[in-house]
Length: 433
Image 1 (cartoon, one colour):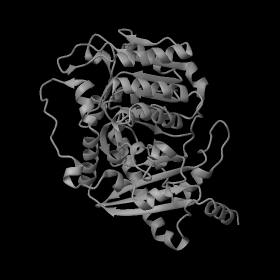
Image 2 (cartoon, rainbow, N blue to C red):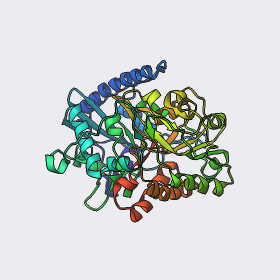
Image 3 (spheres, rainbow, N blue to C red):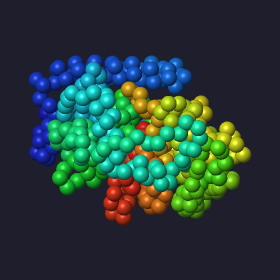
Image 4 (cartoon, helix red, strand yellow):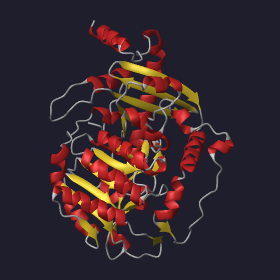
């Protein structure tokens, strides 16, 4: 009776109803198979990171629905009202998309596309945004041996390639998203590395206009105990790092980041913290303080290397040599952190090796070390535009959950910098709770 009344309320409110019961058995069986493969992929991902996989229960559609509906106490809050999970499963040339909320399965779509086709569409989208143009202009430049020019490809508009937004958000899924306010995405690396915030939802709106967005580490994580976000109180244990003086190496040409220094100083002044800037932002000083910090904030250069994500993905800090200055993903994941939030206001901090269960790189390393939420970037970001966006984010996160704070910051930044390449690079990895 309660479920029936809830359904009637949804219909009267104009929200799309869950799929009819007769449509669900086959989809439920398909979800079970995809969830089982997802758990196996997660186990393989843990192994590739050098860890023993934890015991992971295989969630059903009903389990995910219950995760979203469960109400918890203040020490471990439930999901916010209007939350939904968008689960992508790609196997054997087929992409299955499941949209699930508290009422159950809201929408399902399946399409035929190869892994190569997904990568190609994602690469075309990056080209259309010209995010790699930003990378060439301000990111660290590799000048060591073996350097190769970036490949030249044509625009998706010229090639006739199906836009990645149309592949990942077909009409049935977009319709189901109309009443969602907090979207949790569970997907593999290629999909998880696309800027959903800038995807169109309606003719006049993008997803970011209606909902905050997070990328989850996996279905297994949806029911994990999460420390509540402390809002302004979380800033009291802040470690903030800005524009470290990167050592000279024969492999990298590293431009200064004056905006990052101002970003770090601005935050430190707001909460009366002592920032680590320039020469003081050494790897040794940062590692000494990281374990006790409630919040970690890095405004610095970051690098990802899909060929060697644990040793080749790192934050560029200060120090006399590369080994004494660069904090690698492999080093981070072996730490024990108590931070409730890590902000990586750095280039490419959300990239790495694209695995079937997600991305192996810096963001997941911080999550593995114990941080439930990581703000990460999907491409090399503009110093000036990032300073503006992070100024808005810092203020908004004092009163909102990080995912919602980032959404509000993006909306403000979009007014000043309309191009998505300048405001859509960041996303929250972890949980919206």
